[in-house]
Image (cartoon, rainbow, N blue to C red; front, side, top):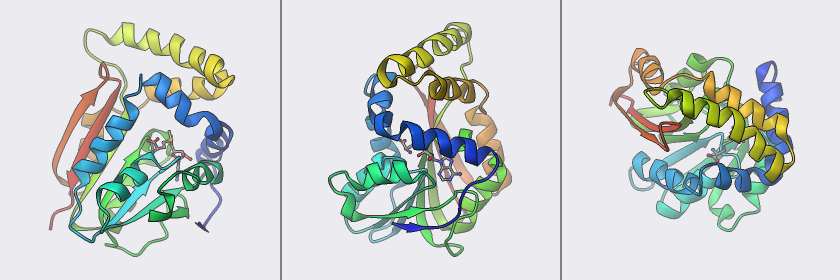
Length: 235
Ligand SMILES: C[S@@+](CC[C@H](N)C(=O)[O-])C[C@H]1O[C@@H](n2cnc3c(N)ncnc32)[C@H](O)[C@@H]1O
């Protein structure tokens, strides 16, 4: 693993939370999504579809679920997994197949890569954690090659007729699960509040469109609480 800079501002708080929850992150994710997270990660890896032998970047790789799936699915590609939490990265690096991925400690707000370095970018649950959403997406546009695709997995603020039920369900269930499964209610209270305060896929699509991304689409998952969104940088 190579290293870059230390986070500041909101990044420092988020960094602290992920350092703390790294040991039980996968277990909590499994419980909270009733086992669906891995399936969504497979869909993210499938949708990025790089050209053979291409360069793939998985941002906020965490325990590496998307990066490892991409390395398995595209053996001819070079997969780089980036995260600013050393603890999360060390869990990723201990998993079977980890040698097939290049792990890099870096902040998504300031990527240590040349412009147009990657054929595809994936990311799971990065955006709601960042201070400068537009800046982080602009940075991805910069390092993506023309014709390259980004695929984003994110939590979605509840909407529609189920809005109140889902909202109150999340308010009660997520911190409770944090307490029972991980014995850490406060970190999962952050997760619940950052989800409810986050942007809709339409708003993310508007920002991407403003950055000149094309062919933008998304699908909501799990009662509208998560979404997978994709977009292409014009060739
Ligand atoms: C909820 S986890 C998601 C991990 C993985 N993508 C998944 O789907 O399981 C979010 C990850 O984003 C990382 N992260 C948050 N802000 C970041 C930033 N500015 N730069 C790099 N990593 C960041 C955290 O350290 C954490 O590992």
